[in-house]
Image 1 (tube, helix red, strand yellow):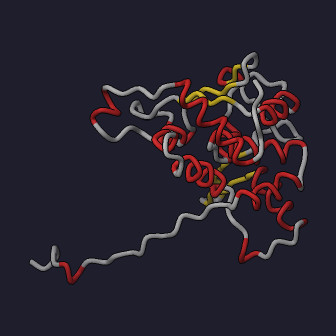
Image 2 (cartoon, rainbow, N blue to C red; image 1 turned 120 degrees about the horizontal axis):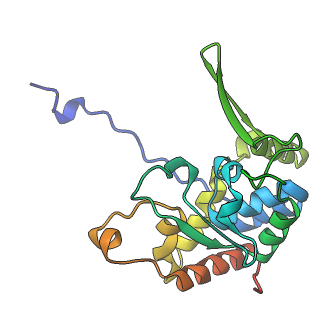
Image 3 (cartoon, rainbow, N blue to C red; image 1 turned 30 degrees about the horizontal axis):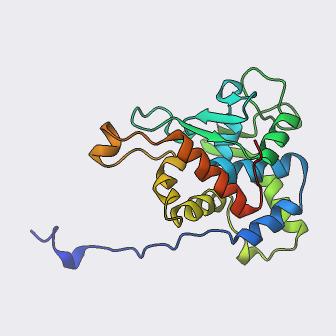
Length: 215
């Protein structure tokens, strides 16, 4: 009889969204180069996670126009999740072209020609290998950033979404940028995000980080 009582409920405080300061992110990018620099920029440009970068397929990249069109790896099997087309910032696209792998299945591979992120089960334990996270941790070590001040890579995705969300016009595109499923009836059945305005939003986002797009 008391299971639905308010006295028996357990509440958890809302966790503050952890994001990077723009200058803080620029310090990380400016301190690295090559593939590591590409990982950071691509995660900010398209709101990607490590798994998204690892799963990026050549067919999802428009190599002529510098665009990526895909569903997130985490939710690609859900019909109501949008396929999002992102314009790449000039620097992101240049690095992606430079470090494109010679593979029919993945755009990016590690130095041994293997996927950037893998997971397997051994002796009933789940073992995850994340090359992107390893590169990021080495960067933080080199910059001597205290461990209690370090932010996870996922904070890059949150930072881009937060910047977009604060814009008076482009804020409406933050959920689409994150490739979230539409929530309202209008979003589900009637209102399709305008690609030109979304392109403008992503280009504006790049400008906030200091990476302009001339294309």
